[in-house]
Image: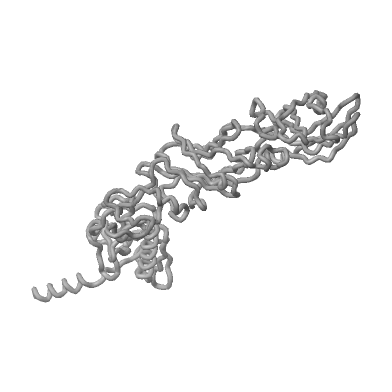
Length: 450
C-alpha cells in the first residue's frame, strides 16, 4: 500500500497541471506562451536587456492550489539596465473568447507595464508542460551599459515614438526660418539608430562589457554594439520635433537687398533650458531643413524649455506642456506679404512700389524691430528711375481707414538700388493706403492683408 501511494504521488507530481480561464479549459495555452516569448526576446534585444537561454513565459496563479490563471502572463527572467534585480518579470495582458468547448486566449505583445516587475506574494508560475522558473532572477545581473554625458544634446534623424502632439498654433516665427512645434515630450531612452554618432560620446562605466563603437575589443567582452542612447543617471531626454519653414526674409526683402547676398542666410541660436543650464545646438544646416528633432538630457522632474534667439528676439516654448511664451503677434499671422506692381511718375523720377509686408524684423538686415509684441512694421520696398533720384522716407506716408496718417521711417538697405521704408502699425493691421509724394504731386498704392 505504501509503495502504491508513492507511485501515485510521483505520477501526479510529474503530470502537467490543469489550467483554466474563468473555469473553462484552455484550448491554445502553448500558442500564447510561444507568442509572448517571442515578444519578450524582441523587446530584450531592442533594449540592452539580459535574459537566460531558459527564460520563457508562464501563466500566473494566485497560489499553488489554484487552477484559474490570471489575465496576464509573466515572462522572464529578464533584466534591463534600469531594472531592479528583484524585479525580473515582464507582464503580457491576456484576453479570452469561448470557442466550441474550450477557451481561446490572445495575448498583447506589448508588455504592460513596460518595466519589469517582481512577483506578488504567494504568486505561482506554471506552464502546461509542468515547467517552473528558477528562483529570483536565475543568476542574472543588471546589464551595465554606456550612458550619455551630462548636458548631452543631439539632432535626431527622426522623432522617437510616444511624443505628445503640440497645438497647431505653436509657431515660433523668425527672420530666416520659422519653427512650428509638432510634438514634444520626455523619454528615458532613445534608439541609437536615431543618432549613431552619439555613441562615440557615451560614458562607458566600470564593469561594462559593452563593445566600443569602433568594434569589439579583445578583453572587452562579447556584448554587441549599444542599441540605445541612455541619459545620465537621474536624467531623461527632453525631445522637440519641429517643422521648419521660411521666415519673414523669404518674402519681405529679396536676396538682392540682403547684406549677405542671399535670403535666409542667418541661423538662429537653438537651445534647451532646464533650470538655468542651457544646451545649445550648432546645426546651421539642420536648422534650415524641413524637419528637425532635437534631444537633450535634463534632470528628471525639471521643466525644460526650448529657446530660439535671433536678432535680439528670444522666444520660448515649454517642452512639458507645449505652451508658448509671449511673442510677436505678427509672426504667427499667415499671408502678411503682398507683391505689388504699382508705378507713379513724379517730377524727375518714376517710382515703382514692388512689395508690401507686415513684419517684425524690418530692414534688409532684419535688425529693426517694433517696441512691443502687439506692433509690427508695414515695410515697403520700392525702386526709382533714375536710380540716383533723391527720394527719401519723408516722401512716403500711410493713410489708415480712419483717416490717421503715419509717417515713414528709413530702414537699413544694403543695396542702393532699393528703397526700404517702414510704418509702425498695430500687429492687427489689415489695410491702408501708401501715398508717395514729391514736387507737389503724389500717387496712391492700396495694401491689404487677410
